Every structure is written in C-alpha cells, then in structure tokens.
Length: 386
Image (cartoon, rainbow, N blue to C red; front, side, top):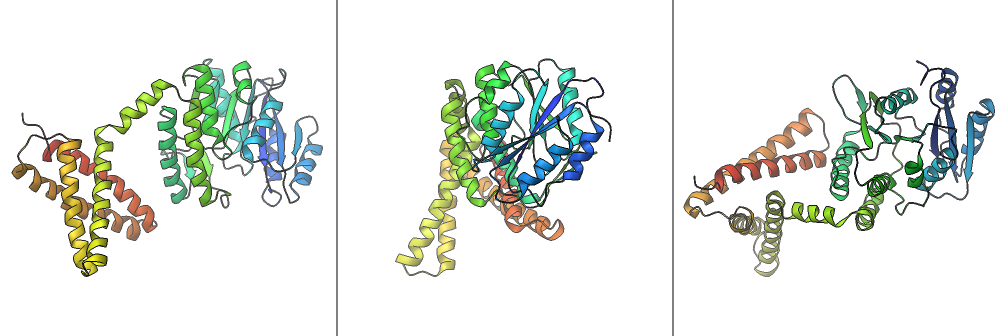
C-alpha cells in the first residue's frame, strides 16, 4: 500500500461511526493503514454499542496514541448524529486540511483516501468529494443486485428532491475541505436519521447556492461487506424524510422544476398507465364479485377496459393527438402487444440466464417496457402529421 498523501502533505482526519462492530471491525486493516501513512488520523465514534465495540476501539487508540481518538456517545443516537458529532470535533481548529467520514466495514478501502485528497489538490473550487459506486470497466464494484437497483431508485428520488444530477448520495466515503462553510454543515443536528447524506447535500447547496463545490469520484474498489443493517421499514421512513428535506431546503425555483417534471409527457404517460391499471382491477373485481363471472372472464374484461382507458388518456392527455382513431388505435394495440412480448423476454433472460430475482427482473422489464412504449407511441402511434 502506498503512503497516503505523502510525507509532509496536508493532514486528513477520518470519522468512523461504529455501532455493534466488535465482531467485524477490521483492526488489522486500520492498524496496517496507520503504519503505512503519516498524515491521516482517525476519530472512532462508538454510537452507544451494546457489545464490546468500545473496548476494540480503545485498544486501537492506545496503540496509535495521538493519531486515533475515541468518542463514546451514550445512548445510541444513530449514524447521522455519530457522524455529525465526530465531524464537528474533527473540524475544530486548524489541525486538519481535510476531514470526512468512512464506513467502519471498509467497503471503500482506506487507500482510496489518497485519491480523494488528490482531487482537492487539483481542484481548488471543490469543497466536498463523494465516493460513487459506478461499475465501470477496470473497476471492482461488488454490490448485491437488489441493493444496487434499490439504490438507483433512491438516487433518482434524491436527484428530483435536490434538483441535482447526483448519482450516489449514500456511499459511506465522503471527504470535506476544512473551512467555515463545511464546518457549518455539521453545527446543527440533522432532521433525518436515515438519509442524512441527502440532507447534507441540501444544506451545502442552500449555503453555496449551487452544487459546484461537490465532486463525485467513481471508486476503483468497493465491496458489499456482510449484511446491511438497513431494514425494509427504513425505506418507508426514508420516503417521509425525503419529503421533509424537500420542504425544508428546496427553493421555489426547484419546486417549479419539480412541477414541470410532474407535468412532463413521460410522467403523464406513466400516470395514464397507472389509471388504466386501476380500471383493470376495478372491472375485474366488479365482474367477479358483483356479476358472478369467472376470474378469467373478469380479467379479460378488465384488461379491455384498462386498455381503452389507457388509450383515451394518452390520445387526449399525454400526446393531444389529432390523428384519426382508425390510425392511432391499431398502432396503440400493436405497441401494447410488443410491450407484452418484450416484458416476457426480459423477465425470461434475467431470471433464467442472469439468475436475477424475479421481482427485480420484473422491475427492470417494467421500466424498459414503459420507456420503449412511450417512445414508440410518441414517434409512431400519436405522431403529429407532417
């Protein structure tokens, strides 16, 4: 491992939040890194752990006295507060040129710190460098498929809320330039417990009136280590926190952009599909429960009604077509048939050839079919007359 930052280079401090990490904290990796470097210090934050984490952290601190500090927080307050308290401590005074936080599982290897620091030294305008997990050729990004796809959905939502083209807000490797603006980011407690990274970006953009000082750095290596501590219910909580962040930090201009997005043709197209699906299920239920029809006949009737509603809404609402129905209806049905075939092919390939979970495969297929259906209906079915 090459020494990070080099001898005499700017000093860097990493905050490592730890909660019940006694059995998986890689003391040897931290020890090796500290011996190989001279300009990087650690603040290990014990976030009210119920196991022997505190003892493990204190042992490392005793071995590297002066370079490793332990901050013991009681009771458990969550990762957001552990990071905030650690970063506030790291940014006190002028001991360090850069300070950041790093996940304790070392999913991002410590030797990446030198690459982060290099960005600051090359680009004076940059205040924050965020690690980004992008599976490019020549890089080793080992991420579980389900977490990857959920992460992409989350990142898309974060981009809409922040009105920024951010790729990866949740990677646990971030480094900041120690200055007054970055110190201010960690002065007040975060309003979000689960997605404080998004709130951190929102705070920065509000103070800086833009995102020019944030730099996303594609990582060379990242490994999905162990089981995630994030539960399914946390994704539900994250939705509520995303709304709070939007209400708290976005400006009226960003809200206008969001309204423009909501009223965009593709969103109207997706909404028409959702309404058509609702009519499909309503008709199915009515046929079976009220008319006593068989589920098969009810499903056929529901699909017919849903398709008709979908067609009418797209004709009038999404594309405002002036073509004759004799032209547009057969084309619409042809595109729908193509979508059914494409959906089946994608699910088959993803599940049988790639070994992808069937729900993930269906999610991928739905996105692709929705996008291709929109394009085909726009340029062919409901195309304006020349």
